[in-house]
Structures are given as C-alpha cells and as structure tokens.
Image 1: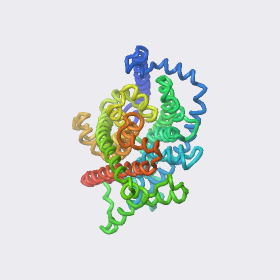
Image 2 (image 1 turned 180 degrees about the vertical axis):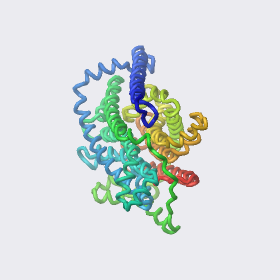
Image 3 (image 1 turned 90 degrees about the vertical axis):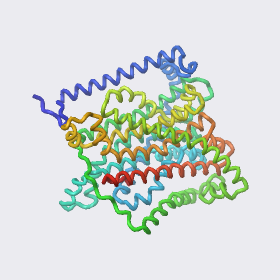
Image 4 (image 1 turned 30 degrees about the horizontal axis):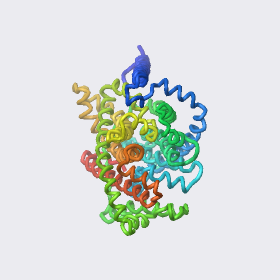
Length: 536
C-alpha cells in the first residue's frame, strides 16, 4: 500500500488530482477563447470593440518588429524596480514586525508611499530625472507596500511556541528571526511577491505613459490610442499581461516548491499577549512623529534632489497654494467638486471588490472547482496593467460610471483575494479535524474555525484595498470619464498647474491614510477582543 501523505492522500492520488486540475484549467481557457472568437468574429460586443483572438494575433504578427524594443524597455524598468522595491520592503517589514515603535513611527510614511498616485508623480519624475529612473521609481513604489505588509503579517503570525523553544535554548533576537520568524513568514512574503510582480509592470508602464522615454509598452500604447485600432490595443495590452503573468507564475511556482513541505504541518499561532502601547505621553509623541515623518521626508527629498522651484512644491508651498494664494478659492472649489465625484465611487468600488474577494476566497476552500474556472479570466484582468486595460474597457462599456466600478473592483479584489486565500490556507488542520469529528459541514468549519483564524489576513486585505481603490478610480477618471480627481489631475498637467498636481497627490494620500487608520482601529479592537496579535 502506498504511504499516505500528511494530507491523507497517496502520491498517486495527488498526482492524479493535480493532472485533473491542469486539464480543467486548459479546458476552461479553451472554452473562453472559443467564446471570445465568436463574439469578436461576429462583432457582437460594442460594434467590434472586442476583436477576435485571431484578429489580435494577426495584428500582433504584423507589428512584431515594434515589440522587442518596447518590451525590453518596460522589462528593464520593471525588473530593477521590483528588485529594489521588494528588497527594501522585506527589510522594512522585518524591522516593523520586531519593533513596535518603528512600526508606529513608519505607519504614516508607509501608507503615504502606497497611497501616492503614480499618475500624479509621473510627470514630476519625468521632468526631474532622465533615463530609466522614473520607471524604476514607480515600479519600486508599486511593489513596496504589498510586500512590506505581507512580511509584517507573516512574521506577526509566527507560532509563539516555536519562539519559546528557541528562547529556551538561549537564542537571541537574530536567532528568532533566522530560525523561526523568517521561515514562518516565507509563504506570506512569496504571496506578496506574486502581487508585486504585476504592480512593478504597471509602475514602469505608467512612467512611460506619462512621457518617460521613447520606448516602452506605455509609450507604444499612448501612441496607438488615436488610431481606432482595437486589435493593436489588445495586442499591446496582452503583451503587458504576458510579462506580468510570467512574473506572477514564476513566484507562484517558487512558493509551491518552497512551502509544499510545510503547509501540511502549519499550526496556528497561539494567542500572544498584546503589545503595550506605553504611556499616554509616549503614544501622543509617536503619533505626532508618524504624522510629521512623511512631510519631513517630502521636504528633504526636494532639497536633496534640487528639483526646480517651479515644479517642486514643499508642504508649505501646497498650503500656500490651497489657502493663501489669490487663486486659493478657485482651487478649493475645483478640488471639492472633484472629491464629490471620486469619493462615492471609491467607497462603492472598494466595498464591492472586498466582498467579491471574500466570497471567492471562501469558494476556494469549499468549492475549488469554481475558482479554477474563474481564475484564467481573473489572472488576465489582474496582470493586464490598468493603463492598458482602461482603453479596452472604454471601448466595451463606454465612459460612464460602469467603467469606473469595473476597474475599481478589478484592481481591488485580486490582491485581497490572494491575501485572504493565504490566510485560509494556513488555518490549523488540527483545529479543522476537531470540528469535522463532530460532523461539521464545510460552511460550519469556515464559520467556526477558518474565518476567525484568518482575521489578521482579512484586515491585511482591507488595508491593501484602500489605496488601490482610489488609484483605480483616479485612473478611470483620467483615461475614461473626464470626472473627479483623475480628470482634475489631467487638466492640471495640461495647464502646467503644478500646485494643483501636488495638491491632488497630497489629498489622495490623506484620504487613503484616513481610511487606513479607520481599518487599523477596527482591526485592533476586533483582534484584541479575540486575544490575537494585531499586525504592526
């Protein structure tokens, strides 16, 4: 008899199941391609806005001489930014996980980095730097927060009993990190890298889209928008998607290989003690320092880089533009009108994206076949950069609110789903076996064990969704609807109104920080009530 694996299945059964899943994925992809071919061939969607795959391939082949230089330029910026951004993110995540004071000090700066809209700073970077620098910077910024959050979450959920064993043998802080915490956080870090890979491609393309160089898929896309050639737009979008999808697949494969032997024996973290916040005075001081740090870094960077005063706006300069300058009243009116259009769509899209991610993550546990059928479409929509996806959606959906909601839900749900699925997959199998022994149904198992145990990952997903939802809305407004903060930013770029460009960037960051802090407060209350450790 074959030796049983830790999950109760023989190797032959496991190989058979894996082969069936691969066949099922290929079958579903083939069905989708056939449906797409029929819809495109007979022009059944938006009068031909959705070309058939064969038409896209024919156009791609006729343009094949254009792609190598553009793909290489985008790849160089994305890959270098990916390495730099994720390297800094992992180091910062380790620091924040082991030092509560550092985590609280850096919270404002971390959220500001992730919430900073790339479309706002892209023209500033292009005017300030030359060569590949704007692409690398935007790619690194796109990766940083996702991987940093994954690192913090993974380390903070380390099994405390393993830490106690190392301490009992005299292990210090470095030994705990090296022997236990980094290894325990590896699945979460790799999940973060999976999400960061498409973000790096998006960052590089956004810099190109904002004028950062002659070559790159973003430059090729913007040069093709006015030609009324949907097949070329789809070809460029799918080329960008292929780049991101390959990077995503590489890290998914690495994750599967490195964590395969540990998933079956993963144990839940025993409830750790809640970290002391210190005295009221120290709490107030750290909070004020956390708020001030992004503004200090902002001011220092402008001074160090020597950015021209006409382009650069210090915190004092933005305050003067919005409240003291003769044009302040007009600027406030335009800003408030844009906020009134952007905020409702952001809240609706974020809520819908999170709900979809939560339901899909639960389905991945109860009915994996549903997720396998859906994932081919999900992977394509998530790995296709927003600036490539938006013009295609405009052709399909028009320029109304529906395209904003579609884009916002699309960019929100996938990182949240990956995070939630990671949390549900790491639930203690021993705890599940206990409720199964009492005859609990799959839904009861989710309600009593899986969902409560994965609450830290749920809140991590919510923190990821907040800035991405606002970014999705602003890009849709910028490229499609001509409304809200995205359109105000686009108009300001055309008028060289750098004061408003910086104002929109600051306001969008502040909105994301407020929402982020609301999630933090709710997270701390819920997890402390359950005796669990809030993430830093």
